[in-house]
Each structure stands twice: as structure tokens, then as C-alpha cells.
Length: 74
Length: 395
Image (cartoon, rainbow over all chains, first blue to last red; front, side):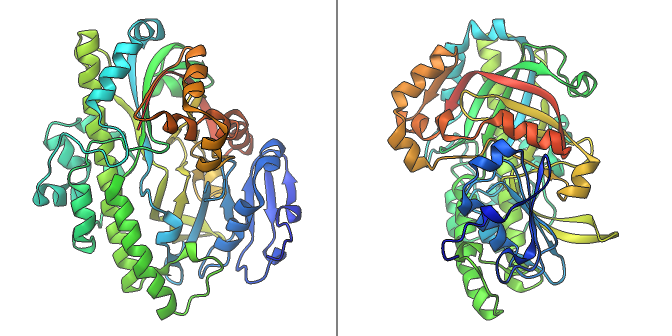
């Protein structure tokens, strides 16, 4: 992803929901959403968020791919 | 991963990569009517006895030696096999996701190698983040629901078993990762990451994986129920009472890593979808949701909600989630220190190797309290009880 941090593209919807719109990277079929408070978001690695956007590229995926507050890379 | 994704049941995919290696890694929670004081007095003896009764560690083998026919029965019929053979009761079955058996499991889709690995391991805990924990209830947030699930008081003792499908599930995943790697080429699927190998859900490679994965799901449900029975027998020996009089019933048993076909409301229309819960718990309205903490930190029981149906395909979190890799944790923590820190908090711990304690040190995980505040705040599952450990056995 050429060093661009996906995390910086997170849009806060409310206290507990964050959106990664479909356009944040190429070939995403749908957007992603993360359910977490600010303290958790601050701890989530960029690689874990990137993984969510990868899932959003798979065929037939339904809006949105959901990241939960225990998300981590792996 | 800590994620949930849904795919169209006609045009979508099913992914061995996304479901991962520990198929139906999950949790069972067993209640007791014992108090923390009663159990704490015997915690050392209890954890040693449990460690003996439930085989732990990488590649550990159990006391059961299944014939190929018996293993087939487990794969197809899940916990029904267990109950017929004296492990658990019909009441346990009623308190498990899918009643401990997914329909459509086909053992002819499972390799001989997977069966060879699975046959001697049923009834074993394994290693990694898997554990068996004696807990006491520290807080009750929703008295009415807690009571319905047999939790009446703070300081009541519960038992949590966290483990999966062992070498069997790992081999099923390994086999199908290879098969689906080919499928990706065959069906010309563009992948952003090779970890996400998959196959069209209605292709042979997709259907075969689903049928084999269900075998691993059933194996794992059975694994946890077999261990539940051994835990009951251990308590019987240590406390000199039968398990029924200690009210040692299953509160609930569920999966944290699984693919399922479910109906969800998509753009106002009820549709079949293929759900991948990877490090995620089902959270249908009024479902019991079990959240495994990490060694030395709190665990939670939550209640599923309608909001989860609308926001997260009926799903919520599964645990604290790592914030540090196992490798980094081993570098940072020393097993002996971790054991000492646990002991200072009054937590008895036993493991096959100190390294296991270091890998799973509480500092390697996110703060479970913040995780729970997030899902409770978002409304995708609501707090019922919080538990803290008294004693823990690790692989």
C-alpha cells in the first residue's frame, strides 16, 4: 500500500463506530466499519486495518466488513 | 483477527484462509454453586488435579483412543456422540451453539492425515492461548439475565474452557488452503493477500471445504464437552460431592472461529449469506456471549442484541485481542515473572512450560475492559457478568 496509512483514513461516525469508505484503496468492493472506542482505535495496528480492507476486496462480499475492538493482525 | 464478514450465498466465496487454522476455537462456561472462598482454599490441589485430568500442551494426546468409526461418528454427530458415550448430558447439548453439531458435516471430505491427527487428541486442551480457568463472578450488571443462566451471586465460581479443534482442525485448514490456492487460479479470483485464499461458495472446492470445516466444528464442540465431564469428575474428587449437587451445568458453549450459512436482512431483504466469524462471537438477540479474557485478566458474559443483527451480522467480540505478537511477548516477558505476578494477584497458575505464560502474558493483550465498553456502548452485546480468575491451567 506504498506506506500510506489506512488508519489515517478512518472516519469517526459516533463514539463507537468508525468507517473506512470503499474508496480508501483500490479494488475494494465494499466499505469497512470498525466498532471500537477511541482508546482501542489508538492501539489497533495499521496492518490489522489493512487486513479488513483486503477482505473487502473479495468477490460477493456484503457491505460492510466489520472490525471488532479485539481486532489484531493475524 | 477480530472481524466478521458476510458473503452472498450465490455469488460469494467461502475462505479457508479467512476462517483460519483453529476452526471452532471457542469457549464453554460451566457454573457451580461453590463460593470463591470454598474454592480458593483448595485451588492449588484443584488446578493440579485438573492439569492431570485434562491433557495439555502442544501435540498432547488424550485418554480416549478413538477408532476410525468412532471418529467418523464424532465428525458427523458432534456432541451427540459424547452424550451417548457418557460425556455430558442432553442438558449440555441444549446450551450450545448449533446444539453442538452442525448439519452437513461430511467426513469423506476430510483427509486421512487429519483423521490420524484427530483420533488421539479428542479431550485435550492443547497450547497457545488455550486455557482452563476457575473464575469468580466479580460483578453482575444484569441480574435478571444472570439468574436465568444460573448466576445468582457475586463470588460464585464458574469454570471456563477455551480451546479448539486441535491438530484435526489445523490439518483440515492446511489441506484446504492448498486446495483453495488452486481454486483461486482456476476461478480467476483476484486476491489482495495470499492469506485470504478462497473458492466460490457453490464450487466443488467451496462445498467440500464447508463440509470438512463442519467436521472440525463438531470435533471441537465434542472436545470441549468431553473435557467438561472430566472437569466435573475432578471437582467431585476434590470436593467429595457429586457434580449435580454442585450445579455444574453448562451455561453455554460456542465458537469464536467459524463459517456459517445464516439468514440476515440485507438492504431490507432476508437473504442467505455465508458468515465468516474470525475471532468473533455470535450475538443474536438474547444469545449467551462468552468473552475469554487473558490469563490474569477479567472475562465477561454478555447478552446478544437486535442491534447486532442490524449492525454486525449478529456478531460481537471474542476476547481482548493481542496488541503484541507471541514472539515479541517472549522477548519482553519471562514466564517466571508472569507466574509470580499472577500469584501476587492471588491467581494460581500451572503450565507445561514457562514460555507459554510469557507468550500469553496479560501485557501482550489489549485492555479487555475497553474492549467490552466498546461493544456494550455500540449495543452489539450487553454486559451481564464479569469474572476474574482464581486459578488457571495452560497448555
